[in-house]
Amino acid sequence: MLQSLLDKFGVKYEDLTTAEKETLKQWTQALSQKELTLTDVKDYVRTLIEGVERELANYNLEKNQDLFLKARLKNYLMISDFLTGPEKAHKYIEQSLQNLTK
Image (cartoon, rainbow, N blue to C red; front, side, top):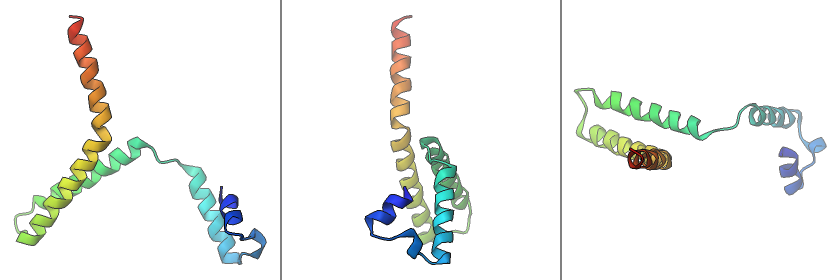
């Protein structure tokens, strides 16, 4: 994959400096280790939400800080809803079908 990028920009591996070759090697290793999944993103967004909730639990927040945290929380919740929407819809449909068979 990285070789195709080098080719795309007309860069030859042999022309890279030692530091650039090392960086390229690190990038290759990083890309080959793990692929980001939807579950990873959902878990990370959940962690962000919990972090903001903890900050909002403080009593001595300034008005601007409180507003900023609430805006961040709203954004994270919307992202979470977007990521889990199809899953929730699928569960709702399954539940509705189960109710039809009862």
